[in-house]
Each structure stands twice: as C-alpha cells, then as structure tokens.
Image 1 (cartoon, rainbow, N blue to C red):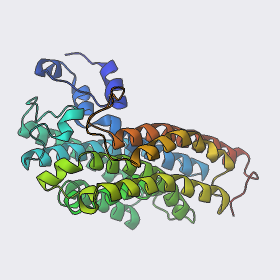
Image 2 (cartoon, rainbow, N blue to C red; image 1 turned 45 degrees about the vertical axis):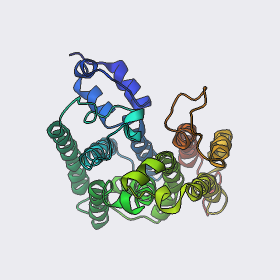
Image 3 (tube, rainbow, N blue to C red; image 1 turned 120 degrees about the vertical axis):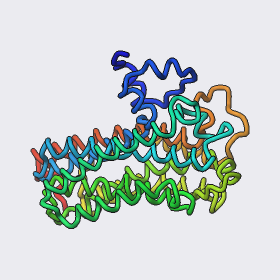
Length: 347
C-alpha cells in the first residue's frame, strides 16, 4: 500500500464511486477515510473555518495554531458525523436495496468493504481526534462558558442528527445552524480567546449566507430521495411538508443568501462593496432556482452525469462557485479593512 495523493485530491473534490473490494483494499488509510466520510462535502467545514479566520484577522484576533487545530478538528468531526450517519442508517435497514445513498458514492458497509466493527472503530478514532481539538479550544479560551456551550451543542448534534433529529424534520435546520452562524461565530470566538466582542453578532450573520448555501444542498438531497425516505419512515423536511413545498423552501433559501449579503454591505456596512463579487454566481443561482420550479424528472437527462442527485446536484454546483467567490471576496474585504480602514467605514 502506498500513499495515493491523487486520490486525496479526487476524494476532496468529488464523491468517489468504487465497486471492487480489491481496489478499496489497495488504498492508503487517508484515502479510505476521505472517501468513507464523503470529504468532497465535508470540505464545507473548512470553508466556514476560513470565513471565521478571515474575520478574526480583520479584527486583529487571528493566530495560526488555534486556527489550524480547530479547523482540522471540526473537519474530522464532520467526517465522524458521516461515519455515524452511515452506521446508523445501515443498522436501521435504511441503506439497503439500492437506496439513494449507495448510488452516488462508496458505502463501505453496504458494499462489504469493511465490517460494522471497523466502521465503529473509525468513528471512535475520528471522534477522539475531534474531541482532542475541542479540549485544546477549551484550554486556549480558558474554559470560556460560551465555548463550552458551543462545544456541547456540537457534540449533541453530532450524536443525534441521524436519529432522531433527521427523522423529525429538524436535520436541515441543524445543518444550517451548525455550518452557518454557530460554526463561523464559534471559530471566531476561539480566536478571540473566548472574549465576546461587539462584532460577534455580525460575524454570526456572516455565517448565515454560507450556512444557507450548505443546507440548500442538504434540502436538495432530501427532496431527491424523499420517495425512498417516505417508504423507509425517514421523516426529513421534504417528507414532512411535501416535495413541492420543499422545492419552494429551497428556492427561498437560495435567494436569502444574497439578500443577507446585500444587507451586510449596505445597512451596517460590515462588508465593503467588494463582497458583491458573489453576484458572479447569480447565473448558477438562476439555474438552480429554475430546476426547482419543476418536479424531479423520472429518468436522468442524457447530459446529466450526477444521477440520482438532481436538486442537490444543482445546489452543489451553485455552492462551489458561491463559496469560492465568498472566500475571494472576504480576502479582498479583509485587506481593505486592514490597510484602508477609512474606506466604507462600518456604521
């Protein structure tokens, strides 16, 4: 077995499908972890951490050691959540019979690549690493009550997301909160040393557009598989409110992303106008919204390579460009705030 750096890049950029156990067994440990945890999706955690880091740098709170430790820990925690998610659904009999999850990426348990015991072991190791990162954050912030609360909240969501929250139609809300205002404000607060500053609420609001872009993928995925989920008794939001209503909710989510950014630019002027660079993703926004106005096709169009994902595929396509532009805009915005503080002063 040798380290396959090319596979690392592939796993971080796209969901990998693999049918032969021999091919799986030949992979290095990191490649297996990245594929099993669907790291192309968990990369959104790193985006959120970068957003928090840039805001902390802008405000004079940035430090490399806590940023790297906490970012890596959160990335691993997200992966641990996906390992637990797959284990729970497999154990409950959800991820069987060519279920949606097994059609778009490797599922080691369903495909017999490893045992339930091995999956639990990987979850425990991942969880231990993530926990160690959290302990570091607690020491770094001198056991700030706010950080303790956020740490506890994240741990509860990690353990309860797959069941019962997702079954109660609350999973989508938790994803928005975690990968939006909670994570961005949480990492920012760690970098302040646990000190609550006057900008924390605006920092949390900055996390809202990114959290919305992340949950748009999740809502889209749950719409895509709502028929299968209904049969298996998985009560996601689309199952609870219906496919059509869920499509309109997701359209509102996508539009709200841009409304919040416009608010942050022109009302509190927390952002400079350079953040309007995100509007370059509007073409993909319009494409995603247009797709959501119609029911999911019964068969995949010939030119569509990502079946069975449909709504989630277009939401992911939008998220990739929007997320990149958001980071690029934040870098430029931060440079302006640091070196030209008189330009577009915050109100």
